[in-house]
Image (cartoon, rainbow, N blue to C red; front, side, top):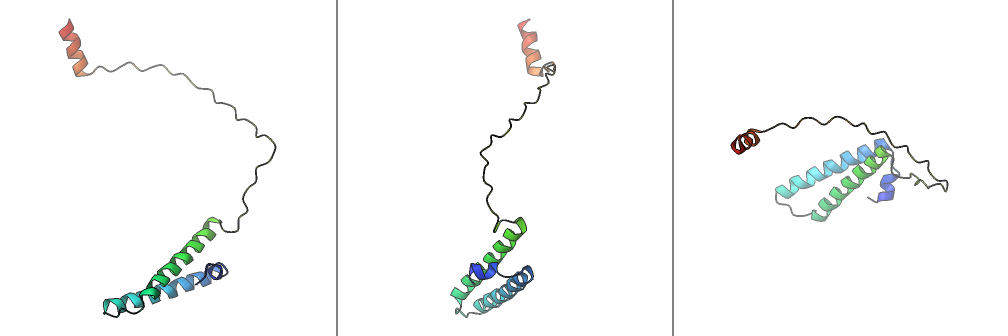
Length: 107
C-alpha cells in the first residue's frame, strides 16, 4: 500500500486496514510454520504496510504531518532576565573515621 493512499484514509479506516493487515500477517506466518514457503515477499510487504499505517497514525497523534514549519521573525527576541542567585551558608564538613584517626595519630 502506498504512503499517499494511507495518508488519505480516515482514522477509522486506518484502524480497519491495520487489523486487516495484521490478520493477513498472522495467516501467512501460520502457513510458513506449516511448511509452505510461498509468500515470503508478501510477508515482508505486510510488515512494512503495518509499520507505515502505525507511522501515519502516530504522526496524526502528534500533529506532525502537514504542519507548517515556524519561521523566525526578523525582530530581536527580548532577553530573559537572569534570576538572582541565593548564596547559602556552607555546611560544616563531616569528618570521617579515617580523617579523625589520622588527626589523632598526628597529635
